[in-house]
Length: 160
Image 1 (cartoon, one colour):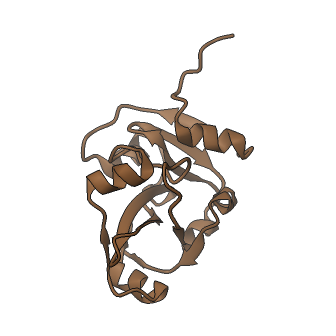
Image 2: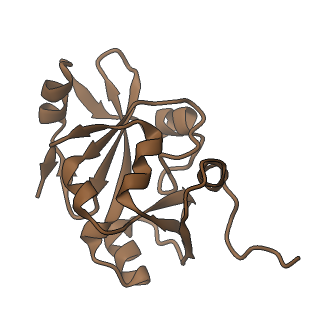
């Protein structure tokens, strides 16, 4: 049996366990390249490249927001929609502790700690999306409806 040409991360194990079809893509990771670099490497529109953002609320509990690569999150609107006082980006150390992934390689699948997941509503309008596979320079393409396995809540918090 030939060796797979992509990493088998906790995210890949999670997708396999839940019978979710995915298309793996490995590319040269560029520090601070972000979703623009990912889109260029894979020949995709940056809107299809989904960021996995780890945030913390006022009680220092973690949460994940999935957002289009070409958009930002309004943490003020997110806090308001969730009935919280304050939400801010988690530190890289805290995000890594909660997820088990390094910054730039965070996937919402197979996280070390089960965190609530929130998905920007317009992501569901995509035919397919590209999301981190659990390692820097490794993305998977899946269908938006496959995000349902995360039991996410839909939000409208994007800022262009």
